[in-house]
Amino acid sequence: MSHDTNVPTVLILGLTGAIGGAVASALARRGFTIRALTRRPPAERPSFAFPVDWRDGDARDAASVLAAAEGASLIVHGVNPPGYARWREDALPMLANTIAAAKAAGATIVFPGNVYVYSSASPAVVSETTPRQPTTRKGQVRLEMEEMLEQAARDHGVRVIAVRAGDFFGPGVTNSWFAQALAKGGMQATSVQRLTRPGIGHAWAYVPDLAETFARLVDISAELPAYTMLNFTGHYDATGHDMTDAVRRVREKPDLPVKPFPWIILWLAAPFIGFMREAIEMRWLWKQSLALDNGGLVGLLGQEPHTPLDEAVKAALGKSG
Image (cartoon, rainbow, N blue to C red):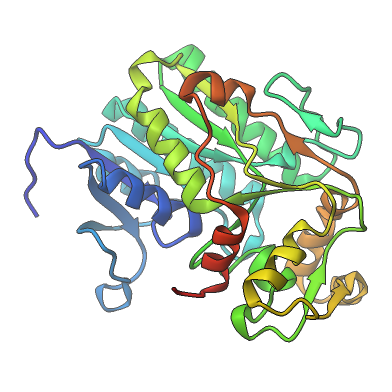
């Protein structure tokens, strides 16, 4: 596949994931050529609303990433360890491969951060300067990833645009707490599940809004410092029932039952199912409030892209019209 050399190219690692596909869509609207690294054979590659320059390879293989990044001005690191496991074994080497490829290509890294770097000792509202003191294994790995990016920018001149956000939800986002627990079954759900106690706040990130945020930061990347880490407020459920109330409104079923999420199932299954053990480790995020202060982001963009809650929930449930 040939490309106009004047058209910027972005390499997406994790195009078929929630954030990778959404960022790709936002950048495609801005004229970027979308390139993606994948292990999937051609017959199993999904179609998108924009052309994709597929490259065979694996994000865990340094040579594959290096070759795919040639000529790219951006690398979106939207890939996570398969199966929500092997965080240290896979996540750190994959990011090291991205950093090496960005350095070789002169590309900027676009990195979705999360709140795992905090802990139950963190304040209810965190900013970019709040101390990062994770107490979980995944949180420690995510902290090391952020430190790798900081060092790459400081010592090697690799430019980084990172945005920290809460739990993902949105159209096509199937591997999420929203889709798998709070509103399992989408428009066919016979009940909704409350993940927190009333009064415990939780941060949610509507993926199209987060993707547009990344794209707007790319638009002004020349004005940003080498390492940019910003917070995305998203939809903050301050009451503990804003999300479940929105699902009931969108479903037009105000009497749709709301049930507490059966956390005991995760505890019982944890000895046998790795995913359950990993999920339990982050239980603290549902037991206490944690909001993200987006003052830095608003200072740069003027406002945070923000779809009204009911509209976002409607899209996440898969309801059209």
